[in-house]
Image 1 (tube, rainbow, N blue to C red):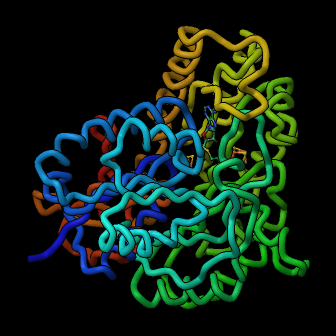
Image 2 (cartoon, rainbow, N blue to C red):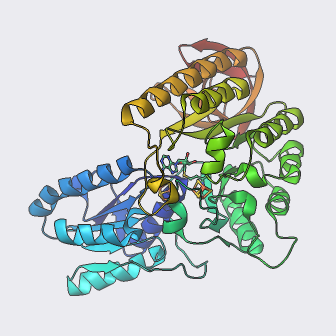
Length: 438
Ligand code: SAH
Ligand code: SF4
Ligand code: F3S
């Protein structure tokens, strides 16, 4: 009889990709993926701790597994990722959720297969979290699950210590992968038919800083990857404004293989708040980058992350953030309410903002962003665009995705899945775009 696994992923793209590595390990042990927790022999929660809400939700969901375990004594439950990289969370699981069998952190993710084997032979719970990162392991099995898109890590960890952020504590210091290893992986993925390659790092702009060779830079990596033959696009995230170089902007501008959708997290529109956040750039510098991007890449689409209610954020500070969103007219705003993370500098700052105020600010910002995106959808009408023919609806219509990720329903049947296709945007109903082949 086949044995099944179910992986639930919380958090960012980095975690989504790491779940593909966990899946690879389970497949090599003979397990098959399933869609429901109830059908699984192994359940893995790959966790996030970026905000308090994420952790609360995860603990709620771990609690809910108790019943499944009662029904199936042989069920194996594993919890890993950023949340369990924190020792106190592991202690909490050990004490309150003893039916969780395997717990590990981010630094020992690649050991999961070992822990599975250990548990299967001993039936003793495994709790193992490493304090420090180890050298990059290139020998990982992966089971990719993101359609035409393939995630590719170019670096791990973060050195920036933004004052609100837990990531440097749970992901360790920056480690860049060897350029040749990345090149080989991307080449192989393109040969396998992947059409979007998304490079991952907490701050891709600092790729190579930890390697003693001044030619190993993010711009040079992009240039190198663009020489790989094939019809594919390269995306990346995230890009820190403090070290986005002109050279990187030029590579995006001049290379057809580079996606023109750029995620450039600003976090706040106020210099005082940016300083307190330890972001190391001013809003003037940020706006200069936006100008350069718009000037050199006329069709570029910029998205951002914003935190509202950072300690000490006044009504005036928030008004500056609001005005910034109006000015830049982002194609997407991921707005978050500040959540104090234990151990970070901002958690012990004075003048924490009340929850209702954070709510009010986030809603105001999201309403503005929604309005801008609605207006932008109008601007797509009767323009020529390129889509990747992605999938078919249940009704048999082809659906294409624009560079910025928006769906377009395509008229007619003359398309090939997985191909880039020039189209005309012909119509828009509610928020749905329609188009047809040129
Ligand atoms: N390395 C990426 C960010 C990863 S975290 C970067 O620097 O762009 C994703 C987003 O979560 C951040 O951009 C930030 O907006 C938000 N975030 C991080 N810590 C947070 C906290 N303590 N409270 C609320 N939002 C937070
Ligand atoms: Fe967190 Fe800042 Fe690092 Fe991004 S750059 S992961 S926000 S510390
Ligand atoms: Fe990502 Fe959450 Fe970890 S955002 S890096 S999974 S804390």
